[in-house]
Amino acid sequence: MAYLTGFHAIEERLKSDSACGPLLMAKPGPRARELLSLANANKIRIDRVGKFELDKLAPDNRGIALYIENMYRTGADTSLDEFLENLSDRKDALVFILDEITDPHNYGAILRSCDQFGVDLVIGTKHRSAKYADVISKTSSGAVSWIPQAEVSNLVRAADDLKEAGFWIYGASADGEAIHEKDLRGRTALVLGSEGSGISRLLRERCDIMVSIPTIGRIDSLNVSVAAGVLLYEVQRQRKFGH
Image (cartoon, rainbow, N blue to C red):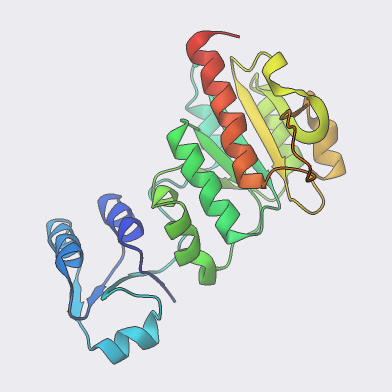
């Protein structure tokens, strides 16, 4: 059982086709009343509850909480096979492969960047625990409700499927070649590994090129979610202004 409590997270979930409900409300303020109207418009059940009860169910609430059955069964969910089948002759599809990004704050921040920079699909493994649903949705500002996500059992096989469909696979690594020197136009898949161990060996072997973000700081590397935003910006910069 999980509840969304952030205003943006609830708003985006209500706008999507994946809202479940009920929407729980206890002494709602002006912002919460806007969400009440949105819930009514989308035929989501609204339950008035006491503050004590709401605090018990969703401690981090601001007078409102939306019940969700499953954070990762949203209207944006898809499968890799379905995604590839629907590509048609599109030449500029953009995919993100996340290899063991376990921190929910990082995962949410990456989804927010994916939304802003037009990622077509995020591929990951392991069903993330529903106890992190609110954290991810808040950190992504509700982008989790919109970004298509495919969960696969084997990322190496997923990379092979993408390569067969004409994708060029770029793995992010501190020892890679400078990202801005590579042509990122066309069908592109970016691979990010965990901050602790990076990209797994077998998946790294499937990458066509390892790329890095040139930095001049004193610490080892960028936070993985920050790196995701920089990488995606470079992809879209090249696609808009040329390599």
